[in-house]
Length: 417
Image (tube, rainbow, N blue to C red):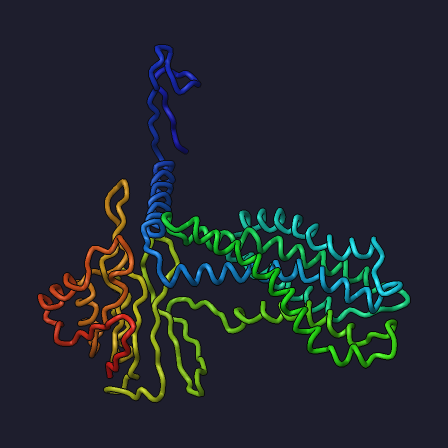
């Protein structure tokens, strides 16, 4: 148990004379305080690293990934404005949907969006964004394809079924709104945060435009089939058109997901790329305390062996020097060691926190791995790097490994081995 003692016994944090009283903490609570301070340090370090960053290709990719989410959301919402006209020609009375039918198919998704924003925003806070991100995408994909597969029957009206599926799709879209927005805001440096958020949200306009463009292309493609129909009440070609219009985006959502997999340290996965088989083994990293980060080892049969050990390429990832990495040389012969260096450091209230290796630490790891070639990487991309190319070159010379360092020039290909 922890004991709290106040100097005057009052429940108020201020004594009778108006001065603040002191509280002493003893027992297990001190460990809790240290944990809280460590957590705060990690949070400050992570925020400092992001806020101090220069705009780079990484941030452009963040805008693209998050923007695609808003793009597809807008496509799904606004494509129905055109699809409803097509639906009217096929399933409506006098080639048009009734006011209630037209209203139903158009407002079902926005209503679902409102529900999805509340539900997924709450679940993301309770369960976690990583666990929830993808669930809303699955809902959108399933409901999008379900709309294209619905049919009319005596027991169930096709418009009513569409309204149900569009509501479910809206729930997924509503869930995507807060989660995609968080991606761009979390990784945006403070100097460019407004511009990044504007670029992401502007994707909604492009989604609306693309829905109209796709409808135009589909209409042009089916033009001859439409003109060949015997009568206005037998426009079977239009039944295909609205299904294609509402399904194109569903297929696009599946594109970035298949094959994506996270690895734990020392976990190995086999991949086939360009007809060649590779083994990828994750290696441990220590970047921010408690944060998730890995490096990896790339292995292929074509690389051959040295002294009975497979030849590999090692990429350190963002990490400081840790003893566990020395285990690599027991199992592999590292031909090329690609090391993230620069001595990235953030200043915290209790002192500086190093995030990546400096030149001496990189040279030490290079020697202990018994690698053939050292390739320095990722040392001039952020404002909080303490060592640039000149400082690293000096450290390598002092450590006696400068003759085995291969420097790269941005945008220029180089054959190392």
